[in-house]
Image (cartoon, rainbow, N blue to C red; front, side, top):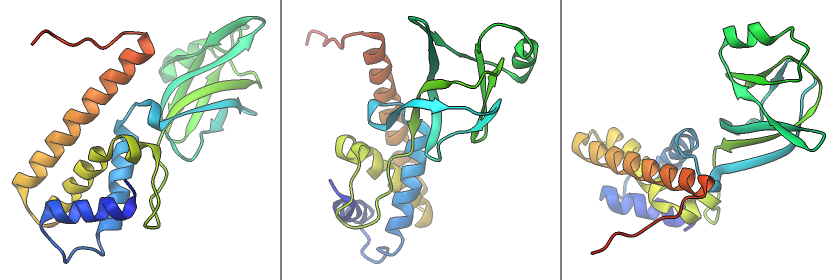
Amino acid sequence: MNNQELQQLIADYLHRTDLAALLPTWIDMARQRIGRDLRSQYNQVVLDPFSTTAQISPLPADYRGMKEISYTQGVARIQLRGGSVDALAAYAQTGIGTRWYRVDGMNIETVPYQARDYRMIYFSNPSALVIDTDTNDVLTNYPYLYLYAALVEGFFYTQDAGGREKALENYTSEVSELNRQSANADAGAQLTMGNY
């Protein structure tokens, strides 16, 4: 599916032909919502190296959630643990290698600080859909997520509370299932089918 096909599908579901000018805005809002909620291989980015030059460093502009940040020390890979301000303060002056991180807005703090290259795996906003033929991995693999997320905005605009509630319910259910499947895949679990 591409941007033009998605816009047509949204208009069809809304049963409205007079809202074409608003569709790009709703699709971009859907993209932001998906970036915030989806934890899938289709919006996962591996940034290696991710270099820090200060204890607090800026995150990539498309960052929406951390999956892992780690570095190699000899043959071992050291994975940092997320912590609170208090946890980081307790370890800030220790002589051990960097072990903790904290995300604050669009910045990451690493403690105890050492300038180094990390491997960061994070979840991002899907790429923007600007022209009619644009697509991205999330739209290609989960077009219904874009549909439901855009319908939440569309039904809100048309003041259709029932439609908005159903679209949000469908969206939330699908994101939860996709995140569960992705977490299982990361853990090496196999999906099984029940007997029918």
